[in-house]
Length: 401
Image 1 (spheres, rainbow, N blue to C red):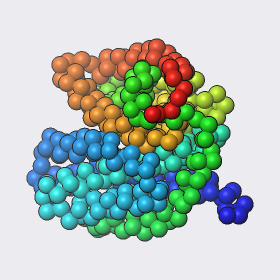
Image 2: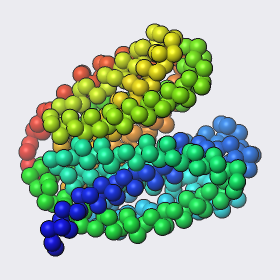
Image 3: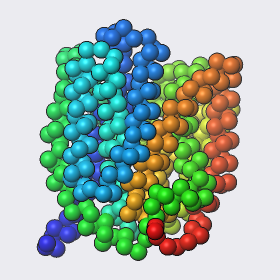
């Protein structure tokens, strides 16, 4: 293997990660949500029925990934990627063919499992495992595929729905994934050798070791706060807008600020991770979110709405880079796939729970601004209170038995 191939490998892995996060969009809520009205009409589903079907498929995918996600630790990356992409394309094809809610459920399960789950899992695990000194910046660059997909695909879907219909778009998605697969396989070649060269000195904890480590349970609430709060508040954004007197058009515009600062937050956090480490930064990354929620709870001006969305974007972007690096720093990379898939399953459960919990509180008469206040206070406290546990060293420095 020549020097040119060695030096090119990190760029290839970054390319793989970016494309995986970009095309994960086909399984993300913002993308799938563009089709729900068509599905409700086609299959005579109520709003509650469509929501229950979607939530059930998402929760099932979160449970299954605990086992499926650990396969990336045991199998060559090109083979693992092939299985994930083929299952992803199958899910898209089943949605295009679905004659009723049953097959629709199976298709949604597959695209959530492989798109929202495995594509990001492949990207973040591969980068965290293959980069050491520049891990933070590499994670920040690779996750740029997420906002790129959010900016690109909704425009294409809205235009395509009018011209071709929803079934044709899912056939196109399936075909795009199959065309992408050879490139992803090529980009993923040699990833295991790169990982072995980069992180040979790290402690290599197994998932069993992690479950026995009190630090994991201490930092988990900090890691899960961002998806829990953002999902809950964004799902009920209409209630918050009504409470604060914000027109929905204002929040739609503010999403541009959210996306922009999400990118900047991820890049800035990646740079800081490479300087001081993810474990040192865990205590602080929720502070922008805390400030944004507190401002939204107390002020009704349009500037408050912009500040709220921008602050949420900062913490969301920082959390993406931080989450990719934290487990590798704490537990090594040999079993990183198993550890990340376990955390991902818990994240899915938390994001399924927050819309229900927030909705119940709203139904009980709790004002949306009070929900924002509670989220802001919680975010301000939980990071400094529990995030410091990540800096502690484990009781034993030995690897798994």
